[in-house]
Length: 129
View 1 (cartoon, rainbow, N blue to C red):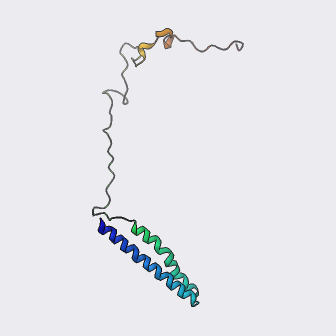
View 2 (cartoon, rainbow, N blue to C red):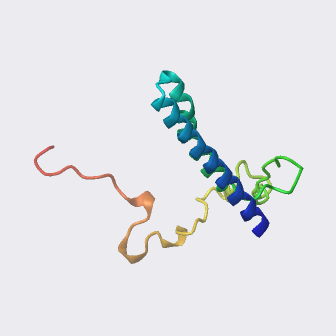
């Protein structure tokens, strides 16, 4: 790990040295009246730090030569539902024709609440009738 850091530091310092040389050349060209030729090393002095920082922060290179691996999701097995159902989770209707026994089937009619079939529709408010 320390060899990798030393390598990245030395590469960064070399690139910063090249940047310094670019700025010195740009100043000398500008002082001698070179015109647009001054922009070439000045542009190099401006762009080199971007690449120097990217390369310095790049980190270690991968040691594997395999390339990219395909994504393989870790999903649970597909739920198929009970046998004979038309869709997963469907319960079969009882043979006697009554409503299926859901979790609240035994609650109808208790605590003063009529069963769902015995309930009447909403009554109209007085005066609208």
